[in-house]
Amino acid sequence: MKNFSELGVDTLILNAIQELGFENPTAIQEQSIPVYLETERDILGLAQTGTGKTAAFGVPIIQLIEPQSKFVQALIICPTRELCVQISKDLTAYGKFKPGINIVSVYGGSSIERQVSELKRGAQIVVATPGRLMDLMERKAVQIKHVKYVVLDEADEMLNMGFEEDVEFILGHTPDEKRVCLFSATMPKQIRNIANRYMKDPVELSVGKSNSGNANITHQYATIHAKDKYAALKRYVDFNSDNIYAIIFCKTKNETQEVSDKLIKDGYNADCLHGDLSQAQREKVMNRFRHHAIRILLATDVAARGIDVTGLTHVIHFQLPDEIENYTHRSGRTARAGKTGVSFTLLNMREGGRLKDIERISNVKFEKIMIPSAQEVRDKKLLAFTDTIINTEIEEHIFDVQVQKAVDALMELDTKELVQKILSLELRRFSVDFMNEPDLNASGFDKGSAGKDGSTRGYKGSRIFVSLGKKDGFDIRSFKDWVADASNISWKDLRVDVSGVYSFVDALPEHAQQIIAALNGQQYAGRSVRAELSGDKSSGGGGSYGRGGGGRSYGGGESSGRSYGGGERRSGGGERRSYGGGESSGRSYGGGERRSGGSDRGGDRRSGGGGFGGERRGSSEGSSRRRRS
Image (cartoon, rainbow, N blue to C red; front, top):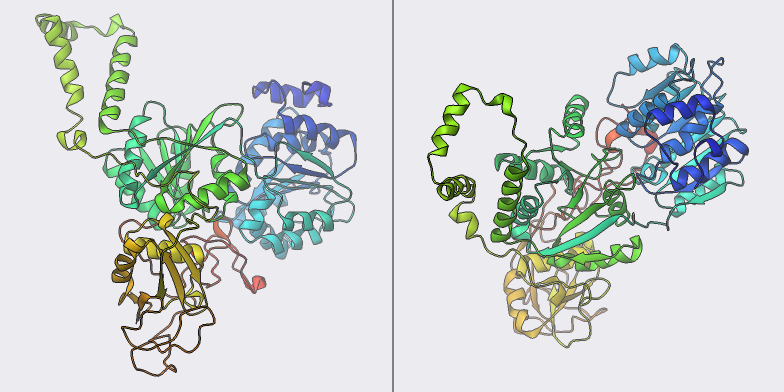
């Protein structure tokens, strides 16, 4: 491995990075810095979060910038305000001993007037989020026509958040002759398209496989029932409480707030981040988290974009992400800078297929663990307590007269009695109710037992007709989840086919009547659901329910011209409704809020579609009219 000096970094910057404690370059730094300093080529870098990408482009940019010129020479575009601020701080640190370089960060949620004022004083480097940069361009407060270096950091995240058109707009206003450096944790087709349009014969650098996770992360899961998810979370946190410093990911802002409130009420050192918080509130929470005043942070994928915190021991998935690639981004927040970490998933029994998808696509291997029992939690905490006593150093200077009186009183006790009293005080923390709590592990999903989509194959069962389908906003996965939740049948015992206005459920014969009883007559979007065995003529009407199935009359004697809508149908927007008993997997069907802009735009962009699953990102049509802050 080469050191930074051998990579061509000059003395002034070497002094700065040595002061920061950098000893040897990371793999991406070792590949990127010489290309940046010794060639004129563009760089297309594939590297996970936490691999040192900022120094990989930041160190050479600081070295190449000409302080005497006050034009914007380098433009760094990133998806979120948090990442924007972090990159600016890092670049300032790298250039500490190189005078005359001014770095300005511009992002939504902060005073645009202040940012305009800073830009007027001159800046060689601008670090920006796409929306705010476009606002400043429209105000003619920033000129990027002289830019020599453009960096797109976390490019896949920008695309996920709906910034593709914004990025292309910005790149279209930069000079043809420039160097483009693009870093991404994953390399989807859209990234390749941008590279083909705006990069010239780029050098492709790669650290690890596409979509792959950090080898220092242990990926674990425990299978639990949905209703036990919060109790299992507490049990897991309790068992690891001696060293835990974690981000817990939820699907929606409401769930994030609810779980955070419960944890705080139950005495845990927690807080949350979500889209309803102001920038000042976000900064306060993050400042407390960075300084370990908060040990557990609840967040949504959108709210956590760009969070850069060192030393995280755990990433906990209270809910798996909607998009599989987001698992890599989540888990990559731990095990940074060569350290190890744990990515732990509380797996609902119906999510087994998604776990297998993550294994296949993200190139990770999950290890099944058991949620510890109440007895195991108590025993571990008691050992930690005794270790603390044994390893505590005695500070003689604190033993004044009053303290010594207390010591003398305790010394009158028999040694065994004294120890038992001390341990009794500690053991009182564990109530009878806590010690009597049940085993929280579900005996369902095992990674080797399910098909790729989480369904079971190859058994003869009962086929059930259900009068809901794709027109009602379902796909195979969401319909299976809904049926499983409503009937309290494990998803692994179901197979479904979803058509336009009806669907079929294949179930074990002993489950058929339970499913029918649970679904038949249930209200969905204002109308009654019909469920019955396929080909069952006892409820009126004849014919087949097969796919293409002939004209079946639904309604025992009413004509086949009856509307399937059965009242008001909602196909977009409006109230989001969730179905299923207990604590469901977080899916919501039929409309609702879709998120596509998130943290940079000072509010949620809405595209009004029938999104499945809480906070969902996607590009909004009519993007030229999207709100920017």
